[in-house]
Length: 393
Image 1 (cartoon, rainbow, N blue to C red):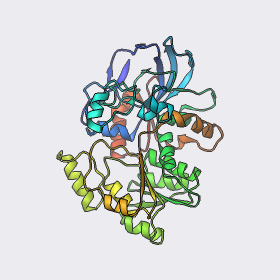
Image 2: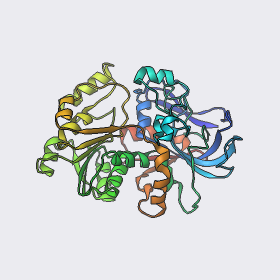
Image 3: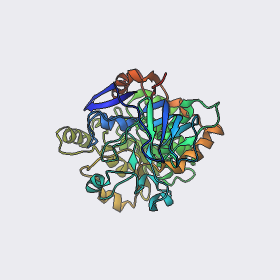
Image 4: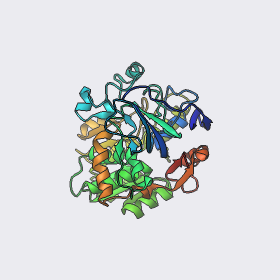
């Protein structure tokens, strides 16, 4: 089959690789109909995520048609149309039983590597380094899905296009959990750093959960325009305005009630001194994460407010203002998304017409064009906000 393979920093290519097969009775194999390039994929592409190996197949936003199932999979059959969550969960361990699926104790075969880096191992993830399982991703014609009796959900409504349900695999639940983690109250003002795909869904989700105002911070004009047009969000262009000063002006000095860092480890420095220092340190290997956005959110958030961090961080960051965080009484919630808890409820919102996630798609393209898609998405050229790949078209 064809698959998009990681070749090294800033290098991916479409290669011929062996087709996946059933390795465990709980496996399924799906024929990919749609898969997307995620902002988290750029952390791999840019070389920030450790334990990548040449030839690794990327892609964790996947859906398709079941073509083979293991003998223990009873909830799926060949021919089913499914969306596959990026989190691989067993459904039975201590954490899965609590609905904390991204903390699954069972599914990462390389848990010891992750434990040394983080203290404990999270769940295995598709297409996201060997520290997190070494599982092949779905930017390919076919995908092996472990624990297929727990993860994938069937899409039985044929009227729903792939682009309407594909993002149940990651970014819609991620944006929704990010907003939910803020404990939004009716009438709140929510500030969201990052108007990429997760940020766009965080805007929609914050509004669903009762936010009165949503303020989006970015410097990419088409992203800011989409947040304004699709969600009626207020916007701040950090190339033009000091973010802290502007937020204080917009909230009469109180600060936003809730803040969401939808950027993560590759925050752009803008004109700020700390951001420039972060960029230099990560470039020279003196740090692994640019935490400029998190610093800004801590300083801007109102007293006794809350900060949610769906943006991916991979290691350690410098000079986080923990004194401000403690003295202001802030609540911080983070984490990979507990996908299996959100997919079905959010599918119902799509079916009920509360949201059409396809608004985010700007660049559908064949798998052969994926290297071009990565460059376009990374460099934000051609008004690119979201790339969807069609491996079998």
